[in-house]
Length: 406
Image 1 (cartoon, rainbow, N blue to C red):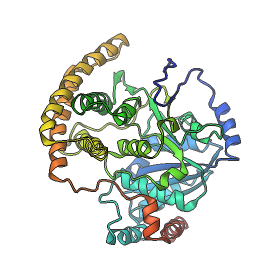
Image 2 (cartoon, helix red, strand yellow):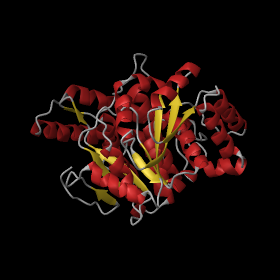
Image 3 (cartoon, rainbow, N blue to C red):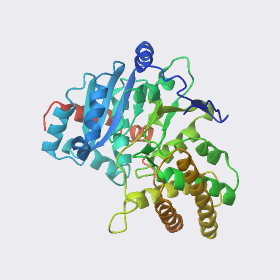
Image 4 (cartoon, rainbow, N blue to C red):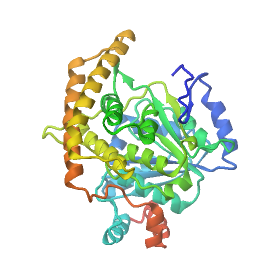
C-alpha cells in the first residue's frame, strides 16, 4: 500500500520505503535481548506435502531472532508425525511439534473433556489453542507471531514486519494484525472479506446502530487475515472460537481486553496467495459456506454480549441491507479491477454474494435456536485454575513426543 492514511482508531503501519528485511532483522536481534520472540505455525499434515510449507521453512531457516517455533500438527498418524519431525528438523531455531492426534496430547484432551473444558471440535481453532497452551507452558517468549502454512508467496520479511510492532520495547502495542493485497493470477481474491465481512459490518450498523466494536472491526484492512502477533501474556486471558470464526473471535477478545490504542495493523506483503476454498463442497457443505456461517455467528454472538438486541425479526432486514451493500461493493471492485487491468467475473462475484446472503439467514436461525451454545474455548487462565499442573503435563508430553518416544 502506497498511502500513509491513519484512521484514528488504531495505528496503521505502512510499507512506505520497502526497507530491506536485513535491516529489520538487525533491529529485531537487538529487541530480542529484551523481548524474546516466538512463532506459532498451525498445520495440517497435508500441508507438508504441498508447495507452500517447504518454501516457508526455507525462509524460516534464515530468520536469526526467533527463540522458539511451535508447530501444531493435525491429522497425522504415527508415521506421519515421524515424517514431520524430519521435515522440520532443518530449522536451526528451537522448535517443537505438537502431535495433536498422538496418544499423549489426546490423553490430556480427554482429561479436559471430562470437565467440559476441551475444544468441542477439531480444526484450526483447536490447533492454535493447544499451541498457545504450549507456548505459555514453555515460557520462553515475550511476544509471539502466528501465520498460516499455505502461503504460496511467503518471504521472511512478512514475519519480520508482523512481529516488529509488538517486539519493539519502545512501542506500546500488545497486538498486531497483518494486511496485504489479495491478488493472484491477474484477479482479485479474498471473497469472504471483500464480499461478506465488509458489507456485513456496514449492514450491521444500519440495522443495529453505530457501535464502537463494529467501527473497530471495520478499520482493519483485512480482518480475516491469519497473520497476527501479540505479547505472550495476552494468550493467557483470551477465549478463542474453535471454528472458522477464529480471526474475528481473536479481534473481539483483543477489543474486550485492551484499549484500541494497544492494537495496530501492518502491511506485511505486496501480494498474498494461498490455497483457495470452493464456495461449497459437492454435498453443499463446507468450503466458504461453512466459513461464512461461522464468521456471521461469531459477530452475532459478540454483539449480543455487548448488549445489542439481536432478534429473529431483524435477520430478514439484515439480509436485505447486506445484499444491497454487497451488490454495491461488487460495482466498486469491478471498477477497481478494470482500472488495474485485472480480470473480473461478475457472475461468480454475485453467486458468492447470493450464497453469503443465505448464510446470514442460516446463521441467524442457528443463533436463535441454540442460545446456550458456548462457541469459545476456555481461556488458559481458567484451565490453569482447574488443573494447576496441566502446563507441565503439556510441556512434558510434547517433549516426550519430540524425543521420538512414540
